[in-house]
Length: 461
Ligand code: ADP
Image (tube, rainbow, N blue to C red):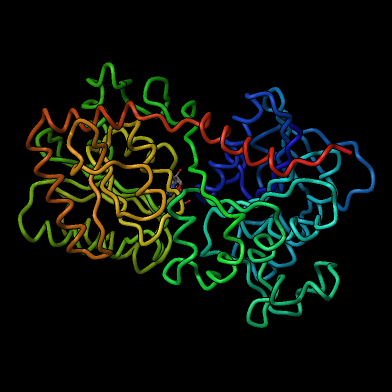
């Protein structure tokens, strides 16, 4: 099939979170499966310096300069080059984000000729769906996080070039504003989100972020497809970021990674204290406040453990994390910032990975943790619930520890369970082994998308 993806971030060219990993890996997996795949994304500052192989796309009548890269067979990445919109620091959060991503979506539409499927991702590409409303192409829209909607004042609607009828409560209008995520949801043939449980959660007031009515109206078209992991990127055997190679069949090297991580972060080199890890955007979503509360409770109670944290975001959470590390230098190490190498080393060096998200559309870090033998401790929401099997199921099948309440007390209890598990090395080894052998590769994800695409495919022009 000829497939075109539109995404505002694609790893390794740009990334703020899971969207970049997911779209890159999906496109690669589809290309490897024999589809002809094009990925369209903005040319942000620095990409051409880092990837000198970009070549100009010789196609006339495009609204911007476009660069192409063919990183592997069947896969072409097209970069929209408009310095006024994209040559700046930071991907999002600019005052003119409406202009920037409306422009991006219009460019995508111009490039979406001669394909059978256009697959747009998140609000930044939402407008692609209504812009293609009358085109003979299968349209699929994936929500990676419904909390970010691209909601802008009504006067920005004129920039879309859509007929006025589209500024309507059944289309892009939402409480007097323009909502680009909603535009994608209402105009796509099919809507997916990145886990089955999150697809059900979106229908509720608790998780629907105000759009639950819109999701309910598209219930027949909405489904959840769990993201996969790119195991060529996230692997423990051939990984330049890691101190030692290891795997489910030869798990011995994990201990060397733990010591290397302790050394790197200035923590005492203890084998007999469990090391908990977390890598997050510091936002309300990720439950960092709950994590802080539970860690404090455990530290005050004299529990023997270590914690390695990496993240950035909300300044008050950054400060609170740094304060905790200062107060407990033997037990808590926190690095504020963004560091891919350290993210791999925390996954490899920690015994447990803590993810107390308030909501989690899919979550990738718990999937990486499973493969890296860092037993996930997760809240029962979204993709966390879909991908982790709780200890309560027995250690023959369990891969992690789950808790339900969104509170420091509930997480504290789960951490207590983790401490107990750590004290029983045989049980821990079993649970860790189950997780390391679990397969969340993209094969399954692409097969599910193949079935969805087949339902909406239109013949190529
Ligand atoms: P989200 O997309 O909501 O941020 P996910 O778990 O789906 O959460 O994906 C997060 C991705 O971003 C993972 O690949 C994770 O390792 C990475 N990441 C997040 N914060 C950092 C950071 N501070 N440094 C390095 N990588 C990070």
